[in-house]
Picture 1 (cartoon, helix red, strand yellow):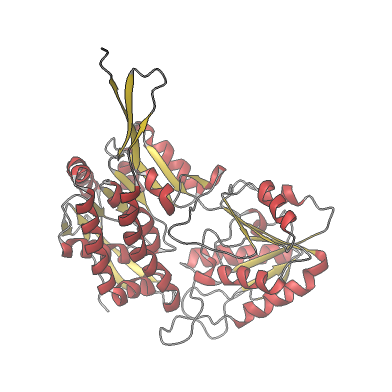
Picture 2: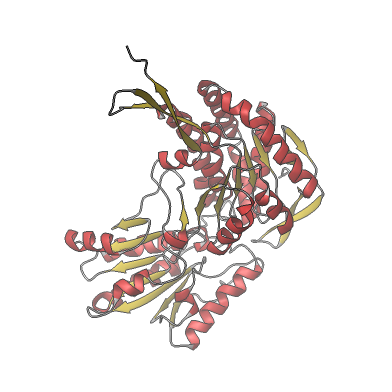
Length: 479
């Protein structure tokens, strides 16, 4: 399989300041050598977006929609190739690549429709002396930094609302997974998207990334990444007043009460935690289980963990691939070992799966008796580790669930008691509360509070992040 290796800037596919090898974490082998941007390419991307900004903003909505549908048709025509890019650059199981692809094509369709629902509106003047109107306009040039865990999904979350709103966008995919983003750039080139509307470039250089952020040209900076990265970008971008939209993850708690449907709870926890090797910002991180159902729940989770098929073969029924690289594998293994050394019990996994000697595979892991002093409790693991923490009726559960510097993105509650569910929905300080199940889609708001971010991905709220509201007031003539 051949992979795109060129950046997409100002309507052209170009080489960059150098080349960078992309390594498949399932095989530890090079799959492509892609162009990377230096300061010259960063300048070219900024200038192109700046030039395109007034032109794309003035482009009628119907024309923008037509370009989005044209890109979506190209995406659909290249499904196998786009999914293959992710399969190789991430080592993601073939089944898991489907969600990435589906969100990209659905986001383009959704925001092409949603922009038509944005309407200007009049305001009533209490004195009757003036007429007022609120109008929506593009915020300007957007700069997007993407995480590596969902290469196309993360791109879709930024690209689609920006295109619909009339904002040129500069997309910097992670240096770990640039191939699928470059493939989208190639499709933009193939359909003849107007120059400067989209730029896609990656870089290994923090200096280049900071140069983009510090530039006065971007009016908005959006990110999917860590809280530390979010803080750094806001500090670096403070050369001018910019708008920010950031999804920064979090240390997601799960509350399993004695009356919970334990099979459903185990299905949700394992379904998210072992999909994409647990490298998901909304993956359950700390699973608080009432001691009355601790043994039963732990057994159900352990059986599910042991049944997960791990590997990379496209033609096999693989459920979970590797973690992203050796550094991630070592960090996760150290978390497991530190927890076991300090009293946690390893019920499943904890090491490399049998028979997989190449790549960065970690067996689906279950830990119980996890304590607050353990690293696996305090930090977002971003890996296939379920950490079970027993609690009793007198446990300070609210403090523990809300504790942590990572902020609040999502929390899960399992109980059949509707009053209890309502109580914990109020108590938990997270941007999303999922009760007795889990649901995500392009039309549902996705965002955290506190250190988990600002703004939203998905839903009409994401579109509003790319729009500014202008008030136009006209004095009425008096008789």
